[in-house]
Length: 223
Ligand code: HEC
Image (tube, rainbow, N blue to C red; front, side):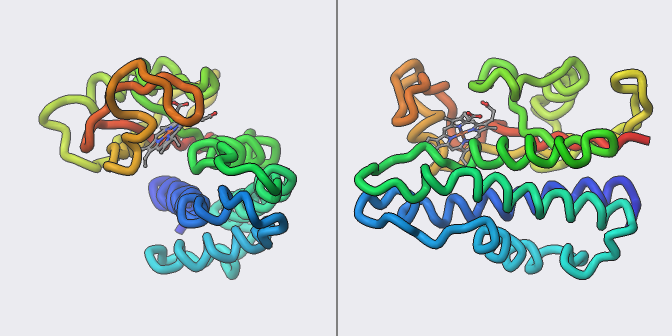
């Protein structure tokens, strides 16, 4: 259970579930007629765990918090609560439609809150091929850029297959795993065509197509 790849898969899985919850609730979040939406950190975590447990063998709520995977999942659960609770004013703003509280922003905030709790042990980041990156904080580091270019973007790379390796990073040994994700049709209103046209969030669209490598969840577990 404390196997590196298992731990990395579980952290990625809970992040994906939390992001999905924010996606599922976009219509509610962007409803200008409702003030208090009841979408607190606890509620978002509850919905995330319900989704996550459908696919995972590890239950974050009952896993021993003294184990590495337990410690990290607890840090991630706390981060989900923090990132949601810190944005209640945005979520509950009456009279505002689109609030830009979207899955990608939420995932970044969760990962930042996770870092304040666990960055000596692990790092969770969502990155992408360099030319697609919007937020500079998401830029791939040298190792990530190399894996994206020479593995995940290669025509013969098996679709959806993660790449992992044990490498030295910031002077420390680390297990690192890169999990590819591809644009779905729902991504293209912002990341699609025409390239350069502003999307609803004020960023120029990237000209992406359905099925393109659009995101990579990058997990680092320090030795
Ligand atoms: C409503 C517009 C919108 C939609 C729809 C959308 N994104 Fe994004 N995406 C953004 C914005 C804005 C950011 C910058 C977030 C931030 O501030 O960190 C972003 C950031 C990202 C990032 C992080 C790297 C970066 O560029 O900063 C990835 C990866 C990503 N999006 C992939 C996707 C995928 C995959 C989908 C579909 C499942 C999707 N996005 C749907 C607007 C959108």
